[in-house]
Image (cartoon, rainbow over the protein chains, first blue to last red):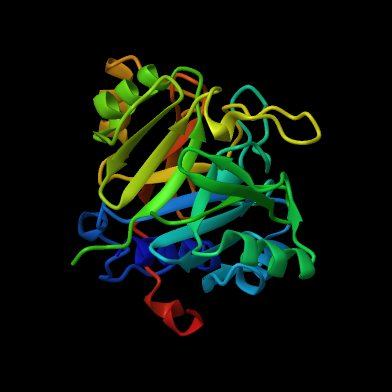
Amino acid sequence: MLRSASIGLALALLAGPGAVSAQTAAANPATINPASVCIRYMVDDVSAAVAFYQGKLGFRLDMQSGPYFAALTKGGVQLLLSPTKGPGGASQPMPDGRRPLPGGWNRIVLYVPDVQGDVERLRKAGVAFRNQVIAGPGGKEIRLEDPSGNPVELFPPG
Amino acid sequence: MSEPLVNVRYMVGDVQQSVDWYVGHLGFQPIGPQSPAFGAVQRGPLRLLLSGKMSSAGRAMPDGREPEPGGWNRLQLVFDDLAAEVARLRRRGVSFRNDILTGPGGSQILAEDPSGNVIELFQPSQIAFATLKAGV
């Protein structure tokens, strides 16, 4: 249900504020399932990011609003991609002038059964990694980077 | 219907303080064993992993870069009445990085946890998209 909300958001970007109202799940926030999970990443180039998450990590594209927004889904998470400049709310600077940027260390964790195998596959596909596989108390972990330098963590389940 | 669990990791300064903040302000429940290095909280199908400096996720990269809280990538929590939620959180002393701003898709504001990590509170706009269904 939250997915449809975000699709509504993106379509609203396409439609602009003058669009005709209609009775839909997205038009009625009360019907949104607050239990669904949405994550927003800031990106330099929405299309390049879409190509990466679709092509390299197996996300499904829900919708894209040109260079200004895209939403993709994988395994219960909806990833919202917003550029650092554009008409969307997420692209606006802060009151103190700071601009939202890609990067940082907070990230989606993707559970993959075979971390080492996936790392080899992705390295061959030209994906950059921020570190080597490290072993902690919870298991092996590695961080890759999307084209904007945002981290995505691969972690074994269980 | 049970939904698949989604895991997100945030780097934090003080794990206990962070767990208390997410539980106290945003309706998360603490889960699993907690230590000064690591804690986890859950809200519906979202499991938020809170990793401190002493966790394996806190180790430096091979090039020396140190993981730290902050940045702009974030969880998005959806509310029916954003203004009311923001007012409630402000009364509780939660700090925000900006004020509510409205874009074409809806209204949003960025709350900050005690480590300076961002959580987006969002309310979709009442704009229809039926005319654009074909584009989905």
